[in-house]
Amino acid sequence: MAVQTIESARYLVQYIKSVEDLKLTFGKTKLSYNHIGALFTDIVLQAGLNYETVVKPRVNKVLIEYPQATNLSSFKSIIDTHGLRNVINWKHETKIERFHTLIDFCVNRGINDCYDLKSFLKENDNRILFLSIKGLGPKTLDYTMKLLQFDTIAVDRHIIGFIELAGLKHTSYDYTKKTVEFAADLLNIPRSTLDQTIWNYMSSRRGVSDSSSQLRMTF
Image (cartoon, rainbow, N blue to C red; front, top):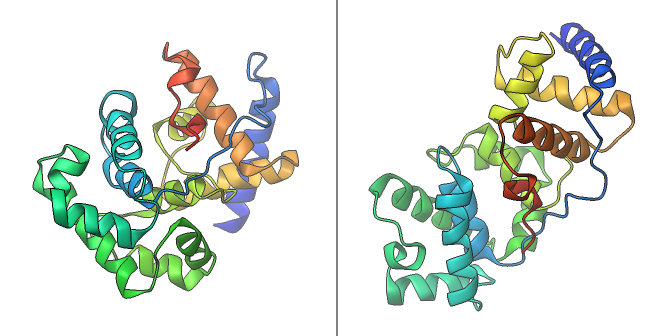
């Protein structure tokens, strides 16, 4: 698998170099969170939902209405007072339950703010533990790490669509992730730069404004 992935990455690099209107996006991805309430709202809601119309307004709501929710202690107090459904303006039980499970996971491990979570996720064993949270898969883990300024790739529909345009097959999350990461390494650029570049390129192909990219949100 490793040899196949490296060969796929080399093939992808040649494709990237052949696309005339694909411009590497340097210095545009400044992802950071210091507000645990907004971070949790983002990572729990983003899967399967439209970011601009559904997720982003709720993230902004938490940021604006509860600026004190920078750590989990404060956020839990807000939830106890107002109820999670009202805080994030969400009713469906699945994501509400997932949200509470994420909170409990962090409380049980002494994670109280974004800095704590970033430190926790630096350890590979802890990333595996994070994946034990029901409903949070590899894409959500990588997305969370990206929001915490790790240099990583989160395989989404844009990444998958791009490698398929290149003539490669999306056989698994891990294969696609490693292929794109190795391609970035071969290009000698940050992985987040290639992620952002692919996002912008694929968004423009679908007629979506670059300004709608969730990867350019800075909080």
